[in-house]
Length: 294
Image (cartoon, rainbow, N blue to C red):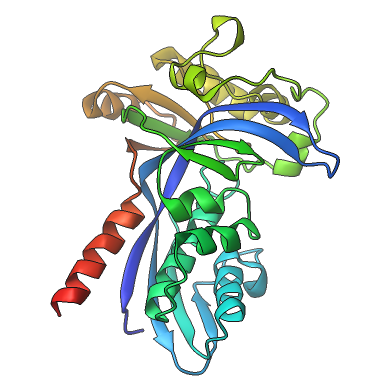
């Protein structure tokens, strides 16, 4: 296809994740710190005149219309009333069910890309509102900032975090989010803390950042438990989100390279740098500047 716009869909890490309650509708109340990474998927877009949404390649086990990318495009068509469509090609690098927000990030990139290609100019607040209907993590990717999040993850306050290097390790297993939130060992009553304390790396009783889902995920997956034990030898490793991916913050890229050389061949791992501004928004700024010059 003739590509008109190519954009990244970056991963995220939950630098901490506390579950502070459960709502009447069954959703869990969270407190978390999102940090964007400089690594993720890539999407290529070209507009169509006939209104069709074509996504390639097909994802195994995912129906075309159920894919978050297609759902995001359909939602934007319905919201705007446009008669345009799009050809979309996905370069998938992030693992499914890893807790890195890959599907949500793909959806956010689709909303922002088609908002430009279709000349809609809906603005970030409306795009984030639409994104929330697709998933709780979509708005943070739409706004493209490191953020303190509450509620189900949709109430966002931009923050500035340190931007260390990370090794991110996927032990080769997909974790079901409903299985995690339904697990009897899941902590659901962590006392809420202030954003200021969270940014200082403090939780109740002076403990460091943690993920309340970690114990349940380790029970669900001995592979994750084994990988976490291994990665913890190099630093304060922890789980991200409700998936199976683990991460360890590091002081240098060279340290990350040394760890990667020691990763078991049965695992998939990569290095990435933390960001406070999303590479997606950096790419959009460049696109907008070039469009003004042309």
